[in-house]
Amino acid sequence: MRYALIMAGGSGTRLWPMSRSELPKQLIPFIGGKSLLEIAFDRFEGLIPATHRYVCALLQHRDMILRTLPGLDPSHFLGEPVGRDTLNTVGLTAAVLTKWDPDAVVGTFTADHLIEPQDAFRQIIEKGFDLVDHAPGTLVTFGIEPTEAATGFGYLELDATMDSSARVVREFREKPPLKLAQEYVQAGPEHYLWNSGMFVWRAETFLNCIRQHEPSVWEGLMEIADAWGTSDQSAVLSRVFPTLKKTSVDFAVMEPASHDDSVQVAAIPMPLQWLDIGSWPAYAQRCSHDRHGNALAATKHLLMDTSRCLVASNDPDHLIATIGCHDLIIIHTEQTTLVCRTELAEQIKTLHGQVQDQFGDHYT
Image 1 (cartoon, rainbow, N blue to C red):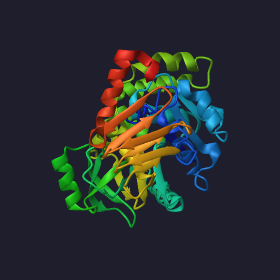
Image 2 (cartoon, rainbow, N blue to C red):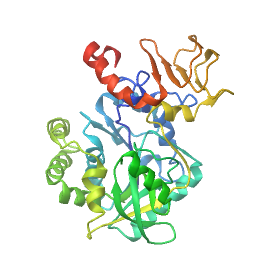
Image 3 (cartoon, rainbow, N blue to C red):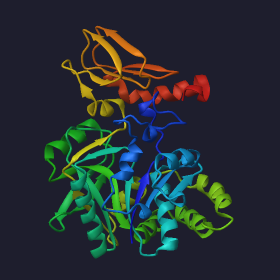
Image 4 (tube, rainbow, N blue to C red):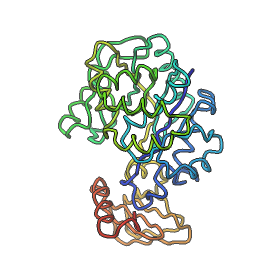
């Protein structure tokens, strides 16, 4: 059977101060009144029934997520006691699904992407499922044509054509320095694509890869799976999961798998409008803009001699007024106001850590 996993456990620190521990970015209703998680869940209508959709996120967000997604079966929420990166999120889901369905084929997606048009998205994902059905030992990923020499994304180096829709992945190139990223973009999309972080594979195949490349993680996941659905489930999960090696799917499985003859890594190009809402500059791209290039996400604003700024507020009665501001990020919340030069947006994550060190959890 086919399943969809939505990973919704990210902390979203680069979208601080609106993204907080009690309301992370995937749950903020800041995309036309809907959250990124709601949009991601609804994206599978007509492709994967709601009865086969799963969400994995921090256990502390369980109640909020179930309120946000009334169509999600509560038993299909997989709660992590702590965040241990994507390998363990995906591995936990694969281990649980394989216990009930040894033939499970899982599409893995994140909750922080905006993808249009959705009909075309579903058609491309269907090709991924079909490829795995015909070649069960294949790990399928989806590649995005680069629009810039981004250093925050991984890249897929492409090799031979498999069929009309897929290419063999020669190697995963994780978050390269600027010079290399520029070379990848100049080489063109026939040679390099962005790694979208979306995958399709047989759960059993993926678990075998974990067993080969991260055996200690596999052992822990199997212990959790053995206890799943029993009275020991919570105790074993709480004891074992925090001890699992913290690492990503790309580093732990996809990179070594691209050099492993026992599996095949394939990329299906996804020529769609794809936006990873992982930072304020990315969020600004989906906002309405005035004639001076200001991205507007605040109900009340007065911008005098101001250009290329993002102004955002979650308080509809709060007025943001500026004079002579250019290339700034201005974010207002009830407890915190952030002002940052756009070019320094990547440092918000560092600032978030310093706020936590100095003021504790009250502002984070």
